[in-house]
Length: 224
Image (cartoon, rainbow, N blue to C red; front, side, top):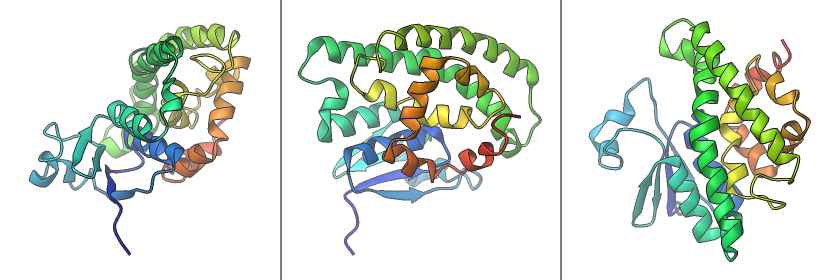
């Protein structure tokens, strides 16, 4: 069997690696996930540093092109294979996709990631949960989600009445967040909750969720 021209390096439990996989799944691109071990320090090995000098994952190899940073990877994949998810062809739509793509990166994800790290990943990091960090970020996230609720009360999706990368980019970190006991923050907001359920129901999202066992672990304690 011929190997895929598109390769993704990393561990799929990472919401950053899975963001790249989601873009590929949504675009219908055949790819190979090249598994790596964080515990073994694979990301610090010379061969990986040659792909990403910062020693992070994911890395995408698309023929002769090598990319790192999950947001850049997702944008490249969709620009090449499914540009309608970037609002291409309509300047106003494209601008709104860019705005909410940035909102995800700078307003929502840092808070959700801080909560997920403390609630889910601390055992892998060899330390105990810092509840003060959780509480601080939960309060901040509540305010951000209220902005999302207001936005989604006016349009079905973040950039308007069309699905875009601005929405899809949220999936993997939100998938992890919804596995914590703070999922009620989303469930309490009807428009955000409906938006989230729509994202999670997409075939590509379901496929990527299979790579992220955190979702399976969290499902049983979702309402604890």
